Length: 59
Image 1: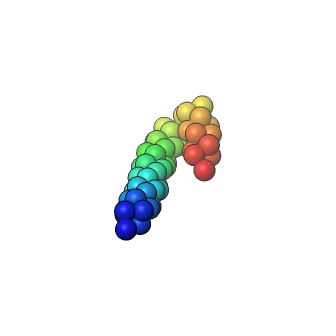
Image 2 (image 1 turned 90 degrees about the horizontal axis):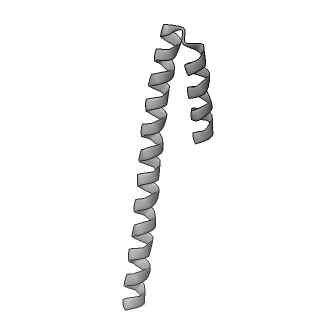
């Protein structure tokens, strides 16, 4: 039974890590998309390209 408990806890840890990674990725993506929109609205081409590059690196 102890081995099953250890395996179960390890699996829960992995699932928690995946959920957290996904949440961080979604947050970063949303932040970059917002910043990209602002750069477009202000006509800041250099910032736009830099942010798009960062966004593509996330994927």
